[in-house]
Length: 161
Image 1 (cartoon, rainbow, N blue to C red):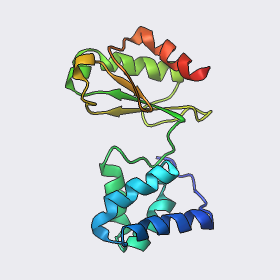
Image 2: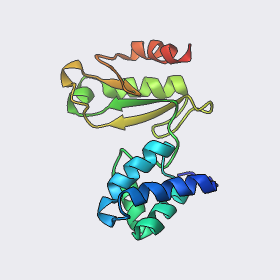
Image 3: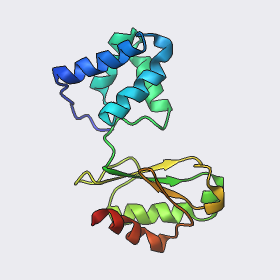
């Protein structure tokens, strides 16, 4: 976990407050508010969580607990092209692990990290519901089925052109 301090600008703080207000600052809407904030900012650094905590009158520890519990939420910025390898049972059995290793090798980053140029990040997810196409990889919203380690270079190349 990196400890990079994020300086929020006044308009960013105002936007977070506006989002929380759109959920009536109701603590029961915390997850929905965090989804909306993340879709606006791309990720949820500690400084953003603090504003949400204050606005929704929820302890910061609870906000942090929700952000770290649900894999959808991220505390680090994702790459322009987030790569997600499905590690659900069907994909795992059909070689998702070797596909994941190949992405890590080709990009020189670990799961949860982003390349220095900000282009790619790697994550794992549990089942995208395309088990018949296992192993499955998603790059942003695009799904690739029956991915082999040999296909990894070509998938990356698609986004480097």
